[in-house]
Length: 291
Image 1: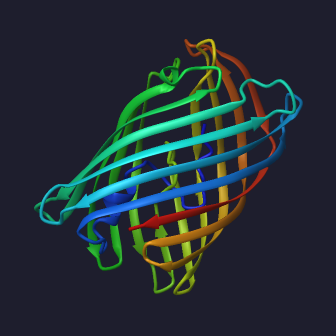
Image 2 (image 1 turned 90 degrees about the horizontal axis):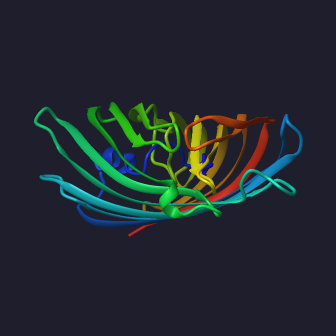
C-alpha cells in the first residue's frame, strides 16, 4: 500500500527526471538513493475499532543524462506498510516493489518529452507478488517558458487490480520559481502513486527549507484469496528539509491524512467492506543522496 509520503511529494516514479533534467542537472550518469519512514497514528474507524500504520520505503535510481540526445534511466524500489488494527483486520503487512525505465529527449520547439514504463507489485503478506502485479507508463512534455518556469501536460496509464481494469489519469508537470525564496512544484516524489498533488516550498536559508504538500491518494493492493484492498486519503504535510549540498537532503515532516477510507473488494470488483476513518496524524523522516 501506499501511503505515499507527502514529505517530498507528487506523482510517478520518473516525473522527477522529466523536469529536473531541464534545470541544470549534470551530464552523464547520476545515481540517487532515497529512503523514508513514516508513522500514521491511531485513527478511529466509523465501523468500530481503530488502526495505525508504519511504513518504510527505499528507491535506487540511475540516470544517464544526454542533453543532445536520448537520456535513459532505471529505478528500483522496495517498501512495506505494517497495518495494526489491534487484532483482526482486513490485511496486515502490505509489501510493494517496482522497477521502471525512463527515456527523455529534446524536441525541436524547445520542449522536452519523456516516457517512463514500469512494472510494480503491491500485495498483502497472505498474497503473492504476482497477484498484485501491474504494468503501465507515465509520459509527458514540458517547456521552459522562462528562467523561472517549466510546465507541461502529462498522463499515466496503468493496469488496475480486481474490477478496476485500467487506471488512466492526467497530470501537470510544474517547476515554478515564484521568487528568490518561494517555489511551486509537482515533483519529485518518494514512492509515488497515482493522484494529483502540489508542493509549495519556502527557502528559509540556503541550506534549509519549509515545504507544504498536499495530494490525493488511492492505493490498491492484492489480498489473499483474490480480493483487493484499497486505502484512500488526502494527506497534507509540512516538512523541514536540510540540504547541505546539491546531492544530499534530509527532511522531517508532520501532518495529517484527511477523508480516509479503507475498502475491501472481491476479485470482480464487488465491495464487501468499507469504513471511513477519522483524521489521522502522521510524522516521519526522509533522505535523498545523489552522486
